[in-house]
Image 1 (spheres, rainbow, N blue to C red):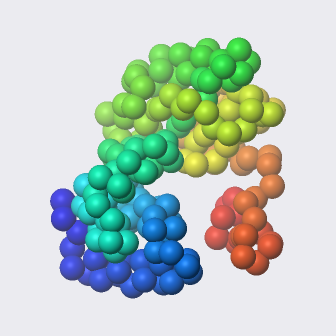
Image 2: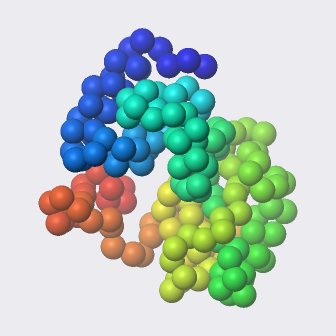
Length: 186
């Protein structure tokens, strides 16, 4: 679905501000992909075209970057997107078993969404948190076994109820050098 005129105007203003932060406009590609994903819930073909247009890149260049990173979703996902790392270390530590258990419990396969649109499940090749293996990511927050990620009881099985909070510190706002209030757990 094409971006509406109102949405496009808002995104263009935000994109101009983001691009202005970088000495080379191409460096703003990842933040712009986050911007369109935040708007649409995934990076659509229109979102890819928007990014390419804003940065003077080809759609092929933008698609290559968006398809490389698993954080950019190319199709709509559930309200609660669950990713389970099943790379070597996480698999040995129980990631494969967690993934299989969630598939059975939710009745969906890899990259599928429950019929009500609430939960989608994805096999992740690496969640970049090997020291916490196995890692489950729920709505872009990592959860480790100490938080009960290996059971359906928490956090993936609690969907729709009070979510389990990650035990790691919040992301740091790089420019300010302090916790970013917009990213703190609620």
